[in-house]
Image (tube, rainbow, N blue to C red):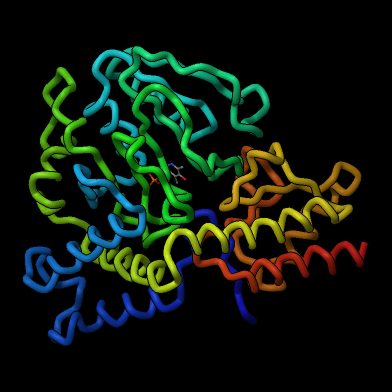
Length: 355
Ligand SMILES: *Cc1c(COP(=O)(O)O)cnc(C)c1O
């Protein structure tokens, strides 16, 4: 039976990305050696990094004066590296969920943290609006897509300070106004690659201002200076990211990814709104195009487990909601096909007809 991968992360990648990466793991560029057993300093590997950096710059239209880095430690390490490198005295954080809270917790180790707004009182079912950002902060940190709660900001905020964005789960799904950011970071395993690499886009002249000694590995400047080759970078995940970037370009770039994301999400939200068994969990205007959360309507609560079992039997993988929301979450990253969403919608319709 065909399986449709709705996992939240690690998550679906285009089939050709997996196949091409697998081939290089068996025989890298016809060298007779595996991609997994060559030096990161081998002359054949540098072009992989160079092409991946160039494609990221091209696809996101990154302005002059920014560096693109491939680091380890996941987005979670960036929660600490960001304030280490950028927090001088005071930083602002928009609290939109679990990941934002974790980022804020690390920042408090380095200075004053202002929570500009929070939707915690409503279990993060909306993106706070109508707040003002202090002008005396070093940056405002935002989580552009809240993977767990299914809310998203698909447009850059208009604030009087520099932005720092955790884009782990929506990078390359839409055009981004990179010039507004001092730093963008994304753990790759949601929309770009296998787990093990984090993409960081950093404004060069925003570095070097924090009044503290920074350990070598946690200093962005180290990695800028060495082109992500200060130590051994995650070679295989970087290669896999390159394959995804090539695929995105071939498909027509982030504008096309954006269009497809709307197409998939519109289809699924329309069914959630129509179907008598289900309802969405977040404010309509803040609905994520990447992580689509829904629950059973109260009068059908006892059908949650049967629907999960039914959908799983039809080939739907990974649709169980995060424990802090319950119900269901269908993650529809770039590689999810319209056909996959149609299959899920069909499950929902068929299940409704049976009840
Ligand atoms: C998954 C996720 C993280 C954590 O990523 P790791 O790479 O596991 O550290 C952080 N932020 C967001 C928005 C995420 O979706």
